[in-house]
Image: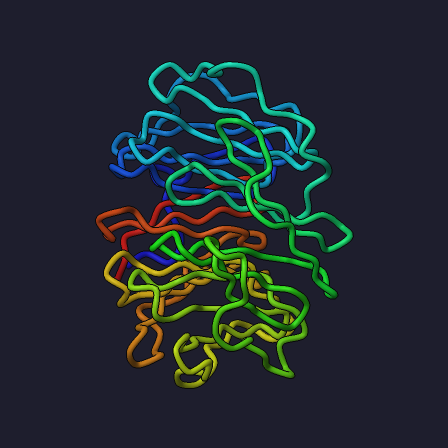
Length: 299
């Protein structure tokens, strides 16, 4: 496997790329950069699809609707835009006035948005209506990351050096709080496809796998280069591979069962901010502050 992407597999923005995600059919990639824009890409040809999606504020979260026909972008000041994937046109007026957002995530079905503000308040919204949906939660530490469980029933919330699992139906805390004194802050979360495990990426340059039933660590931490926080984690669709992205300018593939690296780290020229697997698990996408998103064959 190549450790540096060739030009064919390098998708260029005019600024740092924050986020990347695949459509449900794996044929389209959605990326967002610093200059208040998102872009749709044809995965087979590696070429842009249509014009830039101008969001008018820095995009903090991306998603597709479950049928793949709508792309969703959420910005730092609380605007949510729905885009027609086939035409690249805005669908209706943007949802606005959700407030200044810090950490943001969109549910896998594209129906819910969760966000925290700088006061560590967590609020849920219905994307279609723009109305608040569910109980507002208050945390002591800064909320840095969210992850929706694939079953749609729970959400992981990283606050300071702790991760809690909340039931989306009852609004109650579920299971044990995941805590490690060496976390120094959790920046990335991802549930395994079966919803039984969760991966965390932390300020201490480590990735950890947790068993949710027991709240205990699974195996040893998986290291990136020291003093480089891990900012992105994602499981492959079969749950056998984990990809992690760090401020050490690399993304790494890990064997979930053994905790061993799969192939060599893949390289960017600046920090890696987002990672994602294609639905068939054959490709992975990475986003970086070097102004590119890149596609890789999964080892």
